[in-house]
Each structure stands twice: as structure tokens, then as C-alpha cells.
Image (cartoon, rainbow, N blue to C red; front, side, top):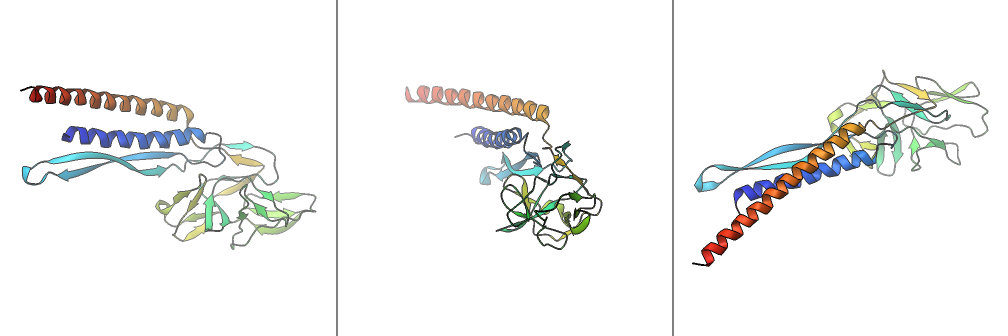
Length: 239
């Protein structure tokens, strides 16, 4: 198999990976707090040994997440929370603390605020947030202070990783990090709002079309190259 075929196959594989990323972005257009991803192509150059020269291959194994602010949509829910600015909510999961921008919370049977998966929302000190089930009014101020009937009870902890590049996506809208978490002092909380996905629909659909066309061009090249090699084999075999 020629070097050009190897190179084209690696390019096709990279385009397939990018198509999966784009398709996942489009599938999460309506997912609260979802962050769009982009596939990154890199070049792998392999020396050809004694013959000299080298062979270049394309790879698209790395992903970059966009943390651009999504639009805040009013819901009116007392426990629907949107973040303005850079920051994350902290969730207590079986695998440890995870970060998210998805702020749709509800009280569980004990009055603890939990995510749709049942993970507890944590305060600035890392303890669960409790909202009395018999409270007539729950209010949450811009700094994350939760009050029941006018009495302050807890402050929702908004944090940032000390090394933003250390964030690893886990489970769609959750992220993990091994770096130290620091308070997100500039970020504020909006009660009764949810942050929409930051996926740009038109941009993603346009990119999907581009990737599809590029893949089709590569496939056409491989088919023509296969026909050429078969023709050569037929001529050589007929002698």
C-alpha cells in the first residue's frame, strides 16, 4: 500500500472523529450548560528510514472545549440557577467533586439541592446546600447566598480550577480537574434562569457539511487509487 493511501486513510479517520464531535455538539443544542467541543488536527511525521524522506499523517485525537458564556433563559424556577461570568457549580458525586454550568437543581427528600442525576450541590466550604422544605420563600442572591423566608442559610460555592487547561469533560455537562479550586469571585448567580448550550447551530451545521464533503473527496481518491492499482496488477499479471 502506497504512502499516499496511508496518509489519506489517517486523514479520513481524523475526519470521522471530527464528525462525531460536531454531531455531538448538534445533539446537545438544547442541553442546559453544555459546552461545545472542537476537534484538533495534528500532524505526525514518520521518517522512512534508509530510503530517506518522511511520511506525514493527520490525527484528530485531541478536543478543545469552548467555555464561552451561553445565553441565560428565564424559567422562574426557584432552584434554577444561571452563572454570569467564569465559574462552576460544585457537585458531590461518587467519583469526587465535579464541576458544571448546568444549574437545574431540585430539593431531595432531605431538602438538599441536587442535580437531575441526584448529585448534591455544594457550598463554598464543600458542604451540601440545604433548603427547608417547609419554607414559604427561597431566595438566592447574586453572590450565591441562599435564604429561606429572609434567613440566610448557606452560600453556593462558585469556583474555578487554578489551571483551566486541566479541565476534563466527563458525562456531557460535568468536568473533573486535579488542579486546585479557587473561588470565582467575579461570577454571579441569577435565580430563576438557566444557561443554554453555547453551541452555535449554524456554525456547527456548516462545519458538518464541510467535513462531509472533505470525507467524500478522500473516499473518491481512495477508490480511484484502488482502481489504478488493480489496473497495474492486471497488466503485470497478464505478462
